[in-house]
Length: 281
Image (cartoon, rainbow, N blue to C red; front, side, top):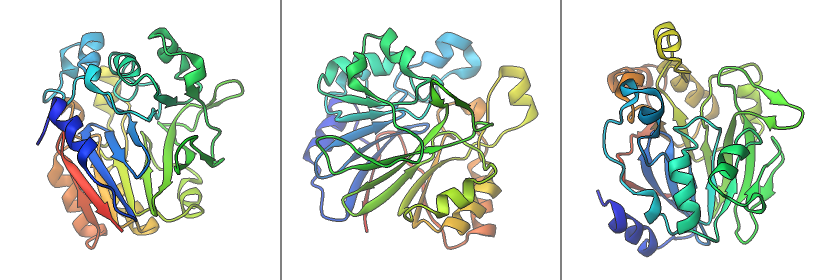
């Protein structure tokens, strides 16, 4: 897989056909997506910030495929919430400098992290939950989806704390779930939106030991993700949030076994860092 400048070069030269998107894995829930008129990044964590802040339990499993200062091709940078593995100040700050025209989509809970690394508030867009917007200068129709990690938290001033993103672009619907568990009203909410072609879900489970010993807030269990795939019916599932931190991951065999049992016809991808998945509808 390409890394560094070679990865950026691959992104730049990859052509985009009608009814397609190019999706690169960046680790954890991080992806870069190229469409016909923009390149967006969602939740990249391209440093070892969590280990540096919270200790060796959070050491990365592999080097970053892309140094933050090389991220020169961002049109929009999306953050689902303020946890460091989704909004990394050591990534977003250098990326904002490397891509000076980029704009940032985030929750109201995340603005302080961005302004602390000198991102001008005029570059930041805070969408309202379930209200579609077209991102200026592009054909991207984006809907921020309230998530629950573990509760669906809402503040009168800041809005929803946890977002997923429903992206309709170039004839393809892509759903990035951010971090979430299934919560009351979630499935019906998803069913009321245009059916996704590709969904990226956080499938690293959750348990009492991780929660109490290191404060790790978990995500979907394999069985939940498989059953949700059956209920919503996306074409391809991207397995996310289960590779960057070995201590906060579950065996891939457990995820595959759940899919084989509950969603045996579900196509799935497990993107390696720097890997390109070119989706054509």
